[in-house]
Length: 446
Image 1 (cartoon, rainbow, N blue to C red):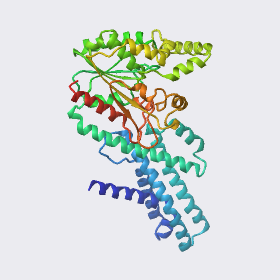
Image 2 (tube, rainbow, N blue to C red):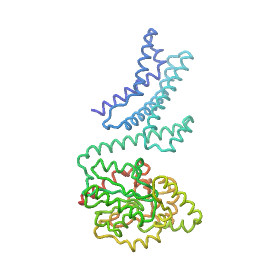
Image 3 (cartoon, rainbow, N blue to C red):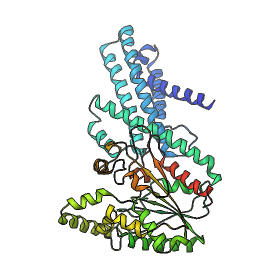
Image 4 (cartoon, rainbow, N blue to C red):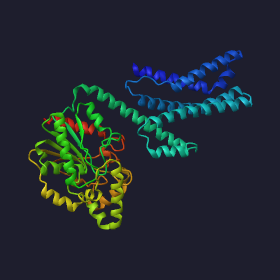
């Protein structure tokens, strides 16, 4: 019943738009006083503005999604109206045989108002959608006025907006339906540990939309807060202090660690070498190079030492200003090499007190990721086979292991698996992946 009412509403709105576009033929056909025609035009103008501004009430309480939905509807109305005019105007001109001035205005009015409706729809989508990429904004800015090219741009933006509305609406309804169940309310709090070259900033979450989704489902989330780059030994010491802080703050006996990339190695060292095994129940590593990265060895052997020192100095300077106490770019990178990994695995054995699990995602091709991962993928593919743009698949295997593949040709890169770009990937819901991961921890008694 609700769906039928929405269809009627949409058809009515489209009908108002279509009538308004053909205001000259309508006034020509209606044989009445000028005042009556003015009233009709005024009423249609008000209805037209109402159609542009009004957003229907939907089950999802999200202003952003309502704007996206309305934007998509306006694009649909504009498209249907444009097709309708191809039949209406020739019929009107042939049957009514109006004066030349009427023909000009009869063509100009639909073009102007259909274009205006389309513009309003596209602006709503571009402003509200988080899935519209920077490249799409640039292309729209440069080519919105180019015939044919702009049609393809508008179509892409419309499809992006419609997919986001459907995807996010379904997610919100799912979250609302299971919110009371607290399926992620684990026995021990969850400590999320970032990888190299990033920090746990307040205004830009390393883990994207994942923590908020976990919290909505009952999880207690904390962050590693270690520096962006440094030797594993030093990062592990920082992580040790953080674990003890969380234990003291929450009163919990242990924590569950979910670590990405180098964060998994930092966590392993803290557990096995710094006595944190008695405070850690589980360690789940995501795309962590447990066997190292041969690409690191390759690049360090090929790059001039002067260039390495230059990059290291610039990086350390920048991240010192961003909040790190004493970042160490080169030590962090060297600890990721395959040579260093062999020594690390020999001296850092797993603790029998901790449950180890690991996950790894892979790209389908170089097109699966943004720069520079698209290029590093090709190098690692040649050296080690399947990879995520930074880590090869077998290097991530540690404890219970699962390989993540996205359907079709998209693939999941090193950044996708932590929702770095906040992108909705068809066939792979990153938020649901972590929800299921933490839900399994809860079911396992952790």
